[in-house]
Length: 273
Image (tube, rainbow, N blue to C red; front, side):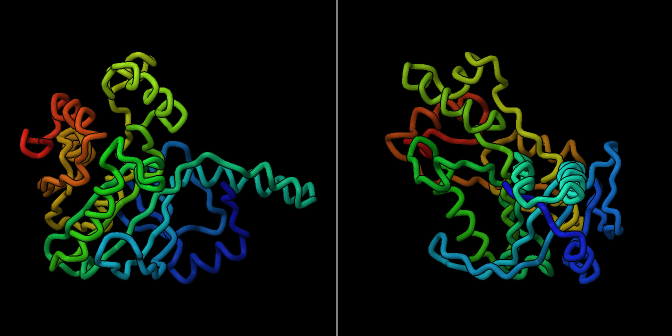
């Protein structure tokens, strides 16, 4: 993942207020020329808004896209870029390949001015969102969320968390859990067999973004997962209410959804029958 921005471009975007930061309270902050940040600060950098016509779901709405990344991760990459630039040689920039999580916010409809935006905090799922795998319901949930937000009079936001693959364990470990599931374990047993938590996703960046874009308004969150609600509430997101979000149930993922229901997800028997 090539993450480098030339300093002059970064400064220009900052002056145009298309590159900025928000802190853990959702307060917008300018980016100074040095782009410095201490490890103690939990800041999120945002690029945008970027017009983005969508061809997902049935509504195909026009969205505003914000790319987001933790300021500490980005600062590490830009410091490395500065050192490589002093050494010379374009081939050296191959060292800038980074595994940092670049998350996204899609603003759809009149979300910026509405009274109660509809929001989906969606964890990345390469197999479901991109490949169209039916082993989970992630792909249909993603598209259904876009449609529901586009159809809602208040509009809303889809926050796409790129670092959440496999409930936070990463794609490589997720592939191993699939093999264990094929041998008879459920999705949570497979995590435990690998010595991994049931769910280790970090919602702190999502919380900062919800505070910034939500601005204290009531937020309706599309989720079946009470842990997501609890995590965001504990991180200081106020006025959250949960709206059930069931989509993509099929014979391939019914056992998976039953395990999620047994773990505590707000799913009724009729939802997955």
